[in-house]
Amino acid sequence: MNVRRRLIPAALASALGLGALTACSSDSAATGNTDKFDVVASFYPMAFLAEQIGGEHANVTSLTEPGQEPHDLEISTKQRAQLEEADAALFLKGLQPAVDEAVGQTGIKTKIDAATLTTLEDHGTGGHSHEGEEGHAEEGHAEESHAEEGHSEEEEHARDPHVWLDPVKYAEIAQGVGKAFEKADPDHAADYKKNTEALVEKLNGLNGEFENGLKDTKTKVFFTNHAAFGYLAERYGLTQEAISGLDPESEPSGARVRELQQEAKAEGVTTVFYETLVSDKTAKTLAKDAGLKTDVLDPLEGITDKSRGDDYFQVMRANLKALQTALGTK
Image (cartoon, rainbow, N blue to C red; front, side, top):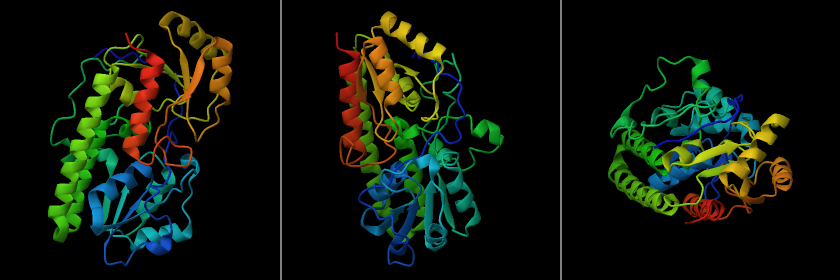
């Protein structure tokens, strides 16, 4: 797979987090000391996994409210107590530093870092290609528990955290989370295993939908306000061109805007995508100047009343339709 990258370098430690799962509680009073397996998740994709895998045995809460700007999350005293009382914490290290710190300071026994359950890559440097790297995440990789070892903090923060937007990588994480739940709550291990297998099967099906839906398009290039779709682009042979970098609040240079205007003409780009939780001003300005359309491509940082769907699968399918429309079919 030949996937081009020309993203501008960006400070990405705060590149993103997410909103809370609508079906789970964000009230700290609802967490801890219940008769269920109490899981605190840091953001929506982790909360969604916990609910799908935990099923009726898990009581899931999220640290990030629906619609809250995830990079700005600060952990309150109540949330620290929430973590202390929980049976497990599910988070993605490097995404929300405040969460990483809080989890590290708690005495919680089961700390599940999703970053150790798949391979995180650097999508933030210009010109980096991942050709020939498909399949690098071998079966069983999700069982690795020390994937961060040997990496400096600087290297860790140079990696793209948006792994949930690739259904295959999200499935790898799901498998690791399922195993962690089985170990932490062995009385319900059989149900966790069954739920994990069902979720992975659905994610594999979603991957097939994306593969079939994007394999024959007029262009392979799409413009987005936020460099959140590197894994998705790599998985399906597309090229993501970000106005900003991995930080959705960063402003592009005049030179970057001119470069994108020229590329839009050369590559047949029709649409500039933006997201619901970040201002669409820059995307709409570029679109107007270049004569392009605008549309939403949701990085699934959270589910709100503006989301095109009620859960991960619905929003991902809405993203697929938006990409098909923008890229065109032959």
